[in-house]
Image 1 (cartoon, rainbow, N blue to C red):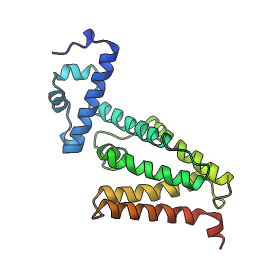
Image 2 (cartoon, rainbow, N blue to C red):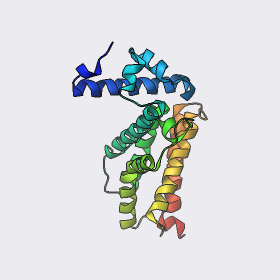
Image 3 (cartoon, rainbow, N blue to C red):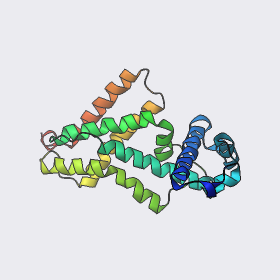
Amino acid sequence: MVRTTALTEQQKLELRERILECAMNILAQDGAHGLSMRRLATDVGFSTMVLYNFFRDKEEIITALYLRGFEELGAELKAVRRFSDAQRHIEALGHAYRRFALKRPACYQLMFGTPVREFTPDQDCLEKSYLCMEVLIGAVNEGVTQGLFIELPVEMIVLQLWSAVHGMVSLELRGYFETRADATAAFEIRVETALRGLQKEIAEC
């Protein structure tokens, strides 16, 4: 049996990550109803007593997964090459958002989709989740500076763009496209039309 008192801080961090990865795998395979402290302890390979040394309950585990998902999404967006042209930068951010969702579908569903009965994000969680959009907000602000967009609050422009990207990604994850190529083509068209609808020259024609 694992004795947490004998572990180094690094080993504790690694074990915590192992628990979270295992929990996410269970969510991906069996959904929220399949995740329990007993099941998780069994899959990780130690007693529930050890598990409780790291997490108070199932809700705390799901909260950790939720927050880590937004941290990973934020890192994905920050890693995008910054273009001087704001439109190209926003398009690249949209593709990065989609890549994250396709790479981590169970995590994405936890963040934005399938509700988990034991978990309702509190205000602190919601505020932390908004941080991942800072890169997009920065790109939109740059677009405003470049005269790209019609006169709308930055937050409204961000919402319009995010809803377009999120909507297409959600359809793709639910299997609405026959092939990945079809999904990619539809995604690119949707991003383009969302941007065109917000552009000053197009809107004023």
